[in-house]
Image 1 (cartoon, rainbow, N blue to C red):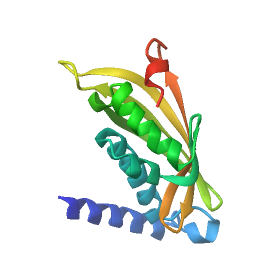
Image 2 (image 1 turned 60 degrees about the vertical axis):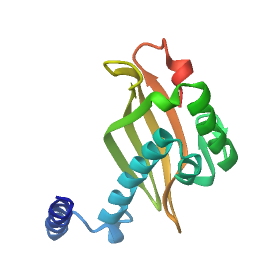
Image 3 (image 1 turned 90 degrees about the vertical axis):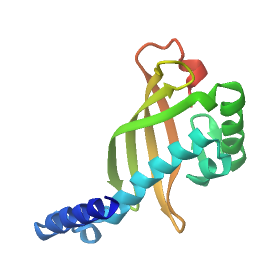
Image 4 (image 1 turned 180 degrees about the vertical axis):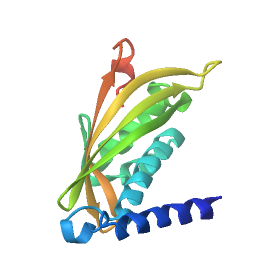
Amino acid sequence: MQRRTLVLIATCFGLLNSLGVGHAEQKGALTPADYIQIQQLYARYNDAIDSGDAEAFAATFTRDGSFNDLHGHDALVGFVHYWRTKMNGTNMRHWNTNLVINPAGQAATGSVYLMLINIGVQPPVIALAARYHDQLVKTPDGWKFEGRVTTTEGPRQAAAAARH
């Protein structure tokens, strides 16, 4: 199944390139590989925070990266521990959709919708709807978040507790 998906993606990018859409290097835009790597960055972020892997979470950011009011590796690691122990993070799952990636020279901006699902209750419920607004940079270790800001959407009842 994965192989079929990769073949389909490669075929689509090849078709777009043959139509003149994929000349990323010539236009200073992103390559198809950049888009895939950025999508994987978003997935690794969600997996890291949901599994409580603080180091993997911090690794999705640049060394001096920021997340809302937090800045730098140690603050990001500390946040995951706080999230898991004090904010019911062990029962929360991040679901992202509608990823938009915009080239910005050697960097990019991104935005994605977030639904935070509380799986600690039956049936699971949406605990928060929000949006991430991101500054992305390509580093020698791959794409990273340089800055990430969360804006809550909908009623603000649980926003202060779930701002992550």
